[in-house]
Image (tube, rainbow, N blue to C red; front, side, top):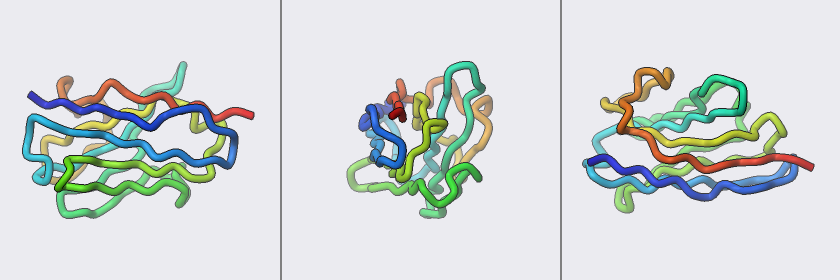
Length: 125
């Protein structure tokens, strides 16, 4: 059974940083791409970033070089470093498992059982 547990969210002022973590279990972590999505109140869940099985990284345009995704296959963790946060970055952030070695950018394509519970990021002065 796939289990994903996010942590690291919190309250931060504009310009601040957070590091989100996602601990995975129940599958061979190194064989799959991992994604980060976010869901802000009143908006549709949107893709943020992907790290493929082969350590290629992809980012949504709004990341603007401020976010970095990386993974530790030995520890079954994927991380999302959030720097220079803006107020519009406030959202629930979710990690998700791809069914493939490459990532997906539509949340609708992710299996229902391949999501974590999310971690809240609030950016406010």
